[in-house]
Image (cartoon, rainbow, N blue to C red):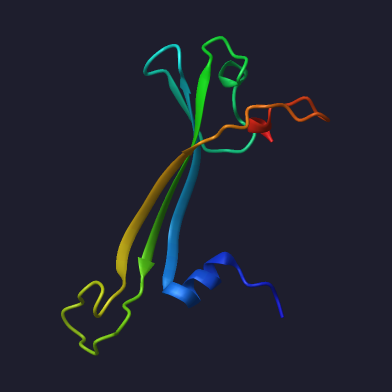
Length: 116
């Protein structure tokens, strides 16, 4: 039997179906207000935005957005109208962010952990 994905487990427990998700690293200069950079691909933090960059010090934040549908707890057998949460799934968007505090370097490669 294959391994069950996180999505499969969430769907079994809560009837949660993930439609889309986006994880980004937001880099903001603590020195220059409004100077930010959004990184959405692994290993693409430009040298200028690394901890020892010229606009530093920086604040690094992980930002996660998930679009999902939650199935009704009790389905009412009515065809029309479709009522989210009663006769149809309820669309929900989750959003959270957290400060990324590990700005050290990998002892083997010497690269900042932000680019690994």
